[in-house]
Every structure is written in structure tokens, then in C-alpha cells.
Length: 262
Ligand SMILES: [Zn+2]
Ligand SMILES: [Zn+2]
Ligand SMILES: [Zn+2]
Image 1 (cartoon, helix red, strand yellow):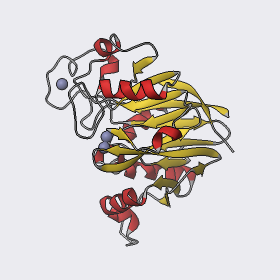
Image 2: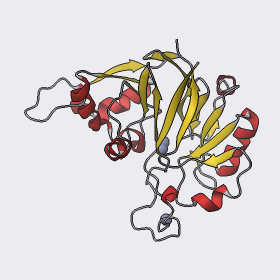
Image 3: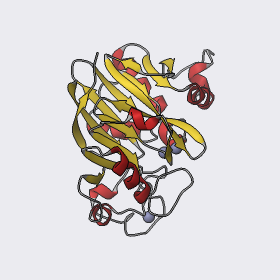
């Protein structure tokens, strides 16, 4: 294990918070923790790699805000728009780093990404602007990314199988309404658990706050953070009713975590 650092680049649901055209209390809140970009984390492991999880539609803004100047690898949880639409911004990292960026996703997710970003994968030469260059890898089991051991954690996002990721002491489980049966053993003993909690009302593809608390109670991490929140969860009011050791994540939150390296 070595010490790494995770930065929450975005902790909001697919619309972001505030939502366009919404005048609710949370969308008009002046608490910066109620401003949520689309969900993503950046995991830095000194001496090994800096790994981005998902490329949101806000990725350019997230990279500028947090001074991200290096992406050694990208992991994709799934292909929903709020997790992939910033992929084109990787061009800048291609130019700075002088080559393609290794990227990891399930075969299904790659199929969707290849169709959404057809121009980056179809081999057709086009005049003018550059294209993002990725080195695609299928995820079919544990992977080693720049010397960092990453364990994919199978999740159910409604009826869609998607992936969470475990980096040693940190597990990042966004966009889920159920853990796959085999996932429980894979997150056993995790210190820091990040888990989807959309809102209080039930939803077909996301955990509610109470459902997320049930998962946390079963996994028993040292600390847990909720993510992918909608505008129905104000930061201060929701935090006040969470049990000890459980918090809402917020954009810009940085945590020290133990990371498993080779
Ligand atoms: Zn999402
Ligand atoms: Zn609102
Ligand atoms: Zn999703």
C-alpha cells in the first residue's frame, strides 16, 4: 500500500446542481457545496499514476479548477452521457503527454463509446481539428494501471451492469441501485466507501440515502461519502441527519487514501 489522494471533481447527478431553470432552495443556495458538477474522481498516486474516473461533460472545467495537467489513464464506469461526454477534452492531454491515453472500460461500455465518439475510432482522416487518442483496454478482471492495482466492482444500475472501482482502501461505487452478489466480497475491508445516493424518494437506477446507508452498514468502512446527489439533497440539511462517519461528498473534497500498488 502507498498513500494516494482522491479529489472529487463532481458529485452531482446527470443534470448537475443547480439544474437549469430551477429556483428551488438548493439550486439557489449560496453554500458552495450545493454546486455539483457531473460525477467524477481523480486519483493521484505519487510515483505511480494519476487516474481519472469518467470524463464528464464538465471535465474541462474540472481540470482547470483543480489544475489537472496529467492523466495517465482513464477508467470508465459506464457509458451514460454524464460520465463520458467530456471525452473529447482528452485531446489536450494527448498533446501535452505526446501520445494516446490508456483507457479501461467494459466491452459494452466501449461499444457505446465507439458509437458516440465515432470520429475518434473510425480511422477516417478528416481535415482540421485533432481527435482524442485513446488506447482502449477491455476490463474483464482486476487491472494494473500505472503500477496501481484496481479491482472492478460489478454493480447494477437499474438493469444495466456497470462497474465501480476499488483502489486498495478506497472503493468508488457511483450510479448503482444494487451491488452484484460478488461485489460484497470485493469491497470487504475497504476504509473509504464512496456510494451513490441520489435523493430520498425511490429511483429505478440509483440508491436513495436510506438504501446507501444500508450498504454502508453492511460494508462497515471507517468512513463513507455519498455522491451523485440531486437538487433534492441540500448539503447542510442532509449532512445534519447522517450518522457518524457518513458525509455527503462535495466538489473539491480531497481525501488521503491508501492505494494498492504492485
Ligand atoms: Zn450518472
Ligand atoms: Zn433545484
Ligand atoms: Zn448512469
